[in-house]
Length: 357
Image (spheres, rainbow, N blue to C red):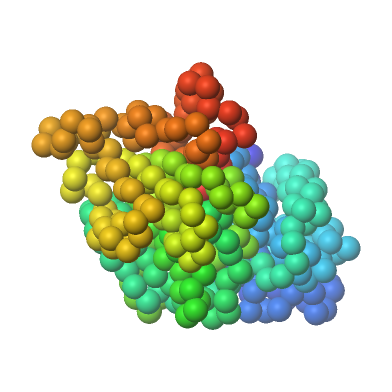
């Protein structure tokens, strides 16, 4: 597999045009030429580098919807053959007959996974072109991006969407909108540049207003509100895990139903509270909302604010509240067992899926 990965890495993205021509020769009209790059890079990445759970989930979400939208499942074998033929031409001299033996079952496994994803995918577009219209840097490693889709993105607060930059086609990262759907269709995304995160580094340090990105179909991240209930909420955010929880606050604000909301926002120090202005505006506008900062390394903070987000959140828990948590893996790793040990019913604990952070 290492050799197959190396062969794929040697292929220039311009090969997507060759892939489309190969596919068009074998089965005309399957795929619009304008979508060849997105499709070719996503399928190729799934074949050679599908071990990262979050990236694999994003690739399968995008490809499952694409196969369904373009009715490609009956032609999956033709598509796989066209992919291998294209890579073999463009990876020369790395491509060998022995590599073909390895590649064929890898393509079959990827195709089987896409079939299963397509069975679960909803109808609609596989990807949306969006333009970056705002790029703010509240800290050195965090960016707040505002994007405008060319066609409205149908998402719900608490969901996550795969994001890809044209600089790194085939690499997708899950991000959660920080807002409810807006009249102008814009979407706000919060991203932190993490070590080894190629997409996050690009989004934070290189992307500028006017550039284009791609968004994939929204997916469930385990954070959607139950429309049939109006229980009080305890929201616990760490880092950019604030984004989907802020969207839930906006959802309650758009249709107040009498519930009270406590939002605990974790950060190392006061200067790391990157979205403080927006949070202050929300709290000033809504009497039912209480925002509690939790500083894990700020000696100047008040005693009630010192500690990690989960520890401080527990102080604000009352029976009957629904708890929603989103943040870094270290914060969420023991959240559910810890809350269960305190007697919080399992049905009232909602922890973000790993791809949504």
